[in-house]
Image 1: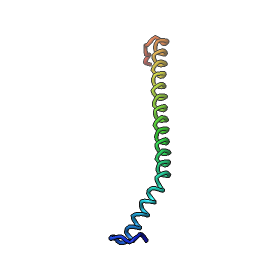
Image 2 (image 1 turned 180 degrees about the vertical axis):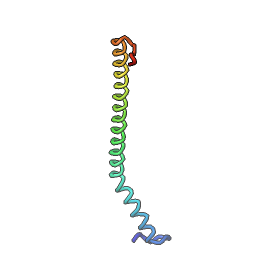
Image 3 (image 1 turned 90 degrees about the horizontal axis):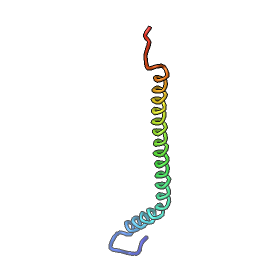
Image 4 (image 1 turned 45 degrees about the vertical axis):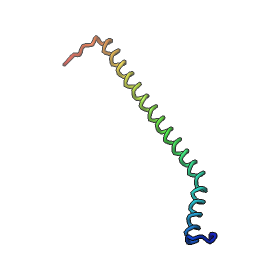
Amino acid sequence: MAIPTPVNGVITDTVSQTSLMTLGAAGSTARAMLAQSLADTLALASEGARAQAEATQVMADAALSAALTRMTGGTRHDD
């Protein structure tokens, strides 16, 4: 129990233990937050790369379509 104070000793013990627990958990909390930030960053980078690849494929499809249209004379024959 804490040193005699005007406040109930059980309350001061509880406050002291809570403060000590918070201080002791700070390191692991910081590491967990860093790991989560890294995971979020990698996920965003992966999403950006996927979106870029998709946009590149759309441009390649459009270029191929334009080239084939030119090669075939650009006309359609309906049967």
